[in-house]
Length: 233
Length: 313
Ligand SMILES: Nc1ncnc2c1ncn2[C@@H]1O[C@H](COP(=O)(O)OP(=O)(O)OP(=O)(O)O)[C@@H](O)[C@H]1O
Ligand SMILES: [Mg+2]
Image (tube, rainbow over the protein chains, first blue to last red):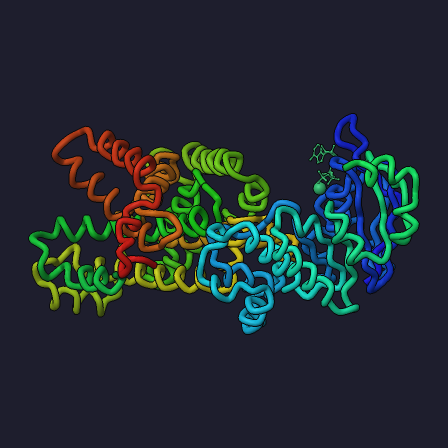
């Protein structure tokens, strides 16, 4: 699914969290969105997903203007997302978490897909446990699987690798790299190795402004990017 | 556990020492239906309503208002009228209240319920004002009236209606159990746990919350209709915030997120209110103390004492 965010502006009081930011992601593309803390990456995701109404600008999915559609309607157009801080159903079991995801807002059917999903996420052994009892790595795996279980055609991933160990990171990376091309991927990630391993194009935000947009090589060579982001240890 | 409870309740009129206890059980069963309906909102939906009496009272008033027309139609007509009244009141109130969360939802439901109470209190020509409406028949079906007296000759007055109250409670339990275990109930729990995530998964959460509010009001209206039939009257106290508070205490003390917990809480509250109050005027003090103790030391309510396994769910 193609994603176009056109000249999005968001204000929080006096703060311009996003100042006329545009993003054009082709169907099937792997795009990374990077930038220092507070750059506006999560804010942009919230606008695309429908959680935040922008002060100006519009969001198009496959050319259709969805700016005024609520979150759940966009989700039903196959937009999936993960959250920077895991957004699970803590007191429900892992299996029940996934059951809600595979139903995708409907009340009928699809429950049979749960065991496959548990398997794919490596969570079969903990299917009966409440989500709150999982370790951080398992919670992140479930976080990603909740989004994947909806079979999205556009997937927004907000720092999926944050806090993962080396092995867990590798497993998550593998899972993302194996996604079919029918899924368009936009990933926010601070782990620069992961970004360069996945992304075909990179967009860089800083203080609500887009400062670069190009192939990994172009972005790596960009002096402004090096200054505000990559150059810093 | 539900089976044990059911066996005790079915056999109760046979071994209970007096008809007084049957009347206590009837009132406990009615409160149990009311409490289960609130638990759908509070326990499963995470919506703490402090105005649930509005729908309970509406159910009672529907019977009070319509009994001249409904008497010929029989028991079922009264119960359906009570549920319909709950639904009719819940649609506009819920459409607004469900937009709020947590303490704001609680205050809004309280405010709406007090408005309904004020209306019943002051619109004397329509509602009977302070007096309310009386003379509502028990509407026990004839066959039950006769059979009930044959079965339980010692319990001429209370016996037949006990069957009505127990049947209503069992059906409400079965209905609400089916709802909470359905995909709808699971989605409601998902909304309680993380509404933002549910939206992101494609669930229209406002509609789900409103649906839960209306279903809960329908069962509250059913309880209200049952109490109106049993007591023969509808009056403003059934709509008052005291009633909302009492059912809230019943659910919390018994254990939220469990219909059985709500039933246990309802029996406890009824026994304190009716039985302990005949020994001491300080029954409210006792209820308050137990409520505080449960909130502090047993957040899962009485039902959580059964962690041993067989009592759970
Ligand atoms: N709801 C809000 N109210 C007020 N300010 C907000 C709100 N959400 C975000 N902000 C501010 O907007 C700016 C952008 O925040 P955002 O979360 O989008 O950054 P980010 O790029 O995702 O950063 P990080 O890498 O730390 O996750 C920050 O200065 C943040 O403090
Ligand atoms: Mg962020």
